[in-house]
Every structure is written in C-alpha cells, then in structure tokens.
Image (tube, rainbow, N blue to C red; front, side, top):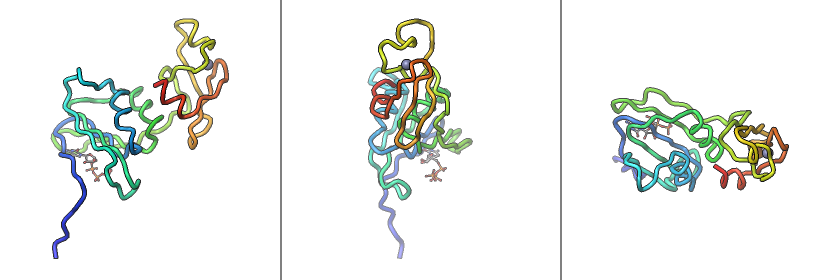
Length: 156
Ligand code: CTP
Ligand code: ZN
C-alpha cells in the first residue's frame, strides 16, 4: 500500500537561502534579524511550528535571491542554535551548514548595561565572550556584565 506523506511541505526555491531547523516560534525573530518586513520586496516562505522528526516542532524560513552575511548568521545562532543554512542555486543545494555560536560575539549584541563604555562612548563596538550555550549566557568584555537569553533576544 502506498503511504501518503502527511507532512506539510513548503515549496522548493530556485535560488536563495533556506534557514531550516529554527527553534519553534523563532521564525519572526529571524525575519526581523534579516530586516525583512512589509516594506521589503523579497519573496519569503515561512513555516511556523512545522512537525519535525529531529526537533518535534521547528520553524523554516526560505528567502529567494538572498545570501546571508556572517553577522546575520551569528545573530541567528544566538536565537536558533540548531538552525541549518542551505544555499540553493538553480534548485540544487550547493552548500549546507549548521550555525555555530561564536566564542567571541563582536558588534551584534548591545550591552544591557547603560553605563557600559560600548553604550556611552562611540565608536567602541560591543564584544562578548560565550559563557554558556544552554542556557545561553554571554559576558561583556568591557563591563563584565552577564546577559541571559531573554536580554539577548531583546537586544538583537
Ligand atoms: N530546499 C529548498 N529548495 C530547494 C532545495 C532545498 O527549499 N531547491 C530546502 C529543503 O526543503 C530543506 C533544505 O533546503 O529544508 C535542505 O535541503 P536538503 O538538504 O535537500 O533537504 P533534507 O535532506 O530533507 O534536509 P534536512 O536533512 O536538513 O532536513
Ligand atoms: Zn558592557
């Protein structure tokens, strides 16, 4: 007997980037990290809380004709540490990798300490060390204040 596949499929893309295995519920934050909003003209498909054998539920974002910059991938790694990035050219996956939390997080997170030198004196760019992956904790190299996942999320 033919088994009918009952999973939700999002259409394949021709050229662009697929961000798969995003922590369930974080697709919207990924879009905001990538500056995709109602004013942008890119073609984007979004799957939210799609069933996944590996993760239970996951989010997926597919963007046509867009390559991600390193700082964008690093930001995504902070909110979706298991995300995979596939680069698609003419319907084929030409490159595929999993995001990785960098051990030094430079210039992408704003320190929560208002008096930190990175907030009061330009142009010192922010710099954090990775303290713990799960739960996510990073420490400012300037004021030594720790930031947790919730604080990081609001500052991205
Ligand atoms: N993909 C796409 N359009 C294409 C090719 C691939 O949207 N033309 C997507 C797939 O849907 C998947 C991701 O890119 O989300 C990676 O593709 P592939 O490695 O072919 O898929 P799987 O082996 O099923 O992925 P995984 O094991 O990572 O779930
Ligand atoms: Zn600081």
